[in-house]
Image (cartoon, rainbow, N blue to C red; front, side, top):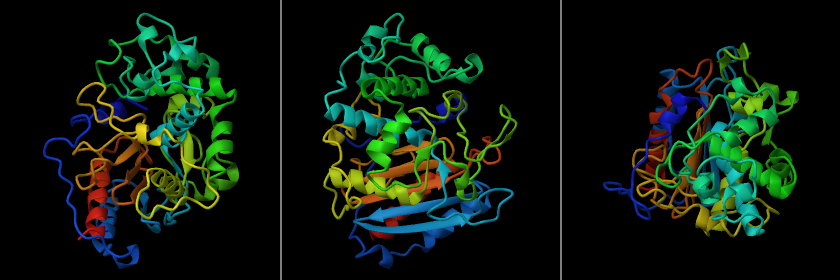
Length: 391
């Protein structure tokens, strides 16, 4: 993730354990079914945003008490007029942190392989430097470890091992636990912890333990060439000198062989709603129906989606984010909701009180990342979806 992206991720507010001041989600009687909701203003809002060049195209997926609905609009890219749909594959960027990495850590906590309050050095002995003995797994998950936001590993290292070594030896910026700084470096360190306790690379682990059991057939790192016709392109990347199609957009993830906890997963709206339904079933959301044959969600889930208050005022849960009143969650989701965004133009939010999940996928970085129009679209879509379902 670039420093521009990181700055955009630092819009946080709120008080631990409760909704931020002035944040009062509007409630109302739910519609009987998705089919009876009026989606016209949702579609019109997304169509208008795409016409204004917020992104080439986008796909919205909504799960409401076991019912699914999709809407694709725009086009795949500047050289492809095909309309995106529920099976269009997008580079998830930082959604990888929650879909993949956070879920893997939840599993490891359940299996007593990782202790949230243990020093990360227990699992990543190479994580060395002044003050680093005080950095715990919990602090890394809440982006309060003291690590800086970013470092150009892709320019400083020549291979995955070298990039990991640089992440491990990057000095802390601040005392652990006192400041929230959204950090890709922290997620890279956590990736190593997961790979250490399971003895395998994170892509193999997630395919075996998560994607395959949930039937997420369009979700993986390093998508095969056969998927190219349904993959949305991302940036005309100056570093690699080409428009990226099926290659991870994030440069540091590319240096990590395309496989990291902070970025690298590709997926479509259908798979992400299946994943969301699985998580919602784990917190007993009304009407939530996990995919047939899915394993039980991690028992640690309830703790991971609860705002931690580290440091005080941060909206961060463990890996996940919570509504702050000015985030991509909009202003209508319940304060118990949890979600995340990705730099390429992706987001996922789940509202357990309503049995609702909202997935919004786009390639807003195509053909250039210098496009600031997508942030308000996320918020506007979330608000309009809730308004369509609760009159």
